[in-house]
Length: 289
Image (cartoon, rainbow, N blue to C red; front, side, top):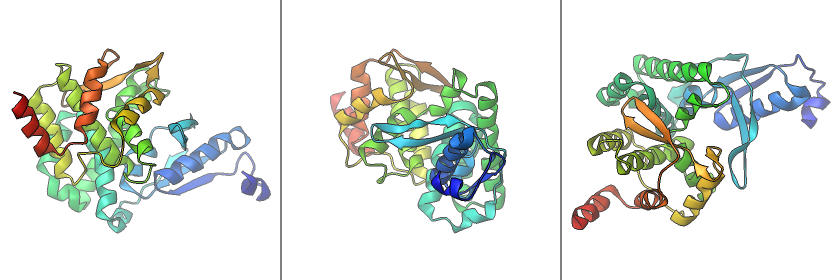
């Protein structure tokens, strides 16, 4: 803010966000609050930012007690993407963007989810055709949801599938061990397992979600965090109202719901399960049976 004032920026001076999601969030928050709002243009350079944070109008910064707790709803005047820049990204940055892309298939589009399964190699290689399609489809799905519910009064909550657990993972690992899309991937596995435990998602569909996430090079387990601390963090999530967590759960590929009646024991058990390697977890389950 000091620099903006020193440079003489007025209410018509645009702020450009050139970079990834952190840059976009910070620049957007400044644009939303400087002089009560100045023009804002997003130029996302990472896959994650292109399919998620640059679209939808949420701008925020983290707090020591939780992620994105300080922010605003502020739509950019334009979003400009240069897909060729994605080829400069390391594989891990591509994978973190795929975490959010997979989410869109789970919450809204069965055919898109199936397409991701069938075109894994092209997706990971970011071939021009695959990159153009999956970025465009992801933005279409998010824009359609935001158009109907810009300020997260109801429908927009579905975009948070996997994020309740993801934010707890990020906080407990100091926002450094996991990229956002990696934490979301683990969070989606947790949410899918909770959905199955609640009897609303078939076990084979849950396994299908886990397989796609793993096949894209995303993590499936949590390291260096406390399950109990993660559980406590859930209650600092923005989707917690009156002490009740509003969970976004999957009913099928392409269809989700919001539930606030998930028992504590189911949540704790499935958070703990995220710390166990999949093969060991399967063996433990078979032993219990």
